[in-house]
Structure formats: C-alpha cells, structure tokens
Image (cartoon, rainbow, N blue to C red; front, side):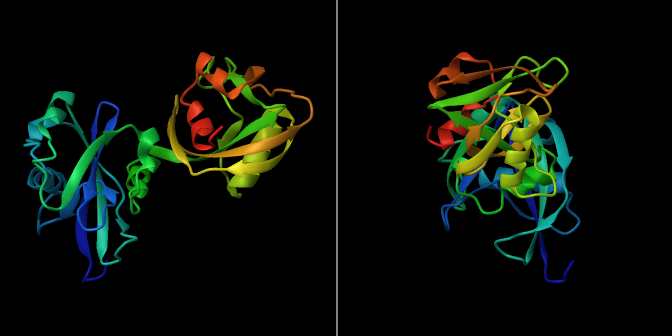
Length: 259
C-alpha cells in the first residue's frame, strides 16, 4: 500500500433484510457510511465511531448482532483511499433511532433499502463492498424469451435449488460475455434458439443460494421447448400473469425492461 494511501472503513449496515444508504452532501451520490480509520483503531471500532459521528444511531458494541470484514480495495473515485468494507447487523428497533435531522453535514438524506432496489440509486463503486463481503455471490444472465406477446417462464424441478419456484432461463456468467451467457443458458435449459432484442441495467436478485447481480435480456425465441433436468414445467404467459406465480423476485426483470 502506498505511504500516501488513506485507510477508510466502509460500513454496510443491515437490519433484517434492509440496508442503510446515505446521500452525500457534496455530490448527491448514495453510499455506505464510513470514514478514515485512526492509527491503531480496529475496523469494528472505526465503523461504530463513524456511524455515531454521522448519525444519531448511538450504537454500542452490544448493539451489533453480527460483524464481518471484507477484502479491502482501492476507491474508484479517488485512488488515494483504500476502502475496507465491513458488515454490521443491528436490531430492527435500533433503526428507529436514526433521523434525517440527526445526520451530520456529510449527508443530506438516508434510506433503508432491500438489495433488489440497490441499482435504483446512483452510487460510486459501492457495489464492490457487497461483493467483497460475500453478500452478493456473482453475476447471472437471464433470458426472457418472447413469442406472440407472451414470455416463457420455467418451474424449478425437485432436483434443483428453489424447487417449485418459477423463473426465467439463466445462470452464472462464466468466462464469456453476458449476452453469450444468456443465449447459452437459454439453449441448455430449453433447447430454444434466440436473438437478443433488448437489455437493461442489472439488479440484485435473491435466490435460495443467496444474492446475485442479474443482467436481464429480452430474446426473440425460436424452436420447440425441451426442458433439461433443472426444470419440470413451463408456461407461455402474459407478463402481468407472473404475479400469479411463486417466484424469487423474477418480476423485477420485467419491470426494469418496461414490459
């Protein structure tokens, strides 16, 4: 690490399934709170101190249900700073302590969000904290096959995770582009051929195996559906009918693609 590099704690605060973001005064970007780590100060102590300086949470170490450190990384906004992400879990009743009026002059607003809302907020490199803490596992590409104004959705089989839930064809992005991953997964899971016609920004989706960053693609599909062993059934449905099926947030893909 360079002698001129400043160590900064980046505090990901979680309560139940909600995460704390704060809006920066200087540029209106949203971020996980934090600040410079003092000499000989532990990450845990620095995280609690910074939260108490920047909010009216009034945290003590006994308020922290879980604490975890992640791999440090260089700030993309300013290479002079080494960011050290930490995860702090606090009780839900403690979240009632924080108020807009209690924020320091570093921030103008705050919000508690679910992870699938993360990319609705304009941040500067904050996603890497979620990766380095192992909160988000990796990247997934999904295809939304379209035919006759209907979309194809698949039911997970008993031999797969999330059995009984419905989702779109997709899987982890390997050593390939997102687009190639989407088409490859479509063919592997349904035998359909497809051509991508639209795409959208990613979102964070929750599955039985944790959170993933998901890249959705709209696909003009051709061929006969033949399922592999990951799925037991399929349906061509109107987009609004997805509300009648049990999914793991799959409808978010339709929402951000404006279908």
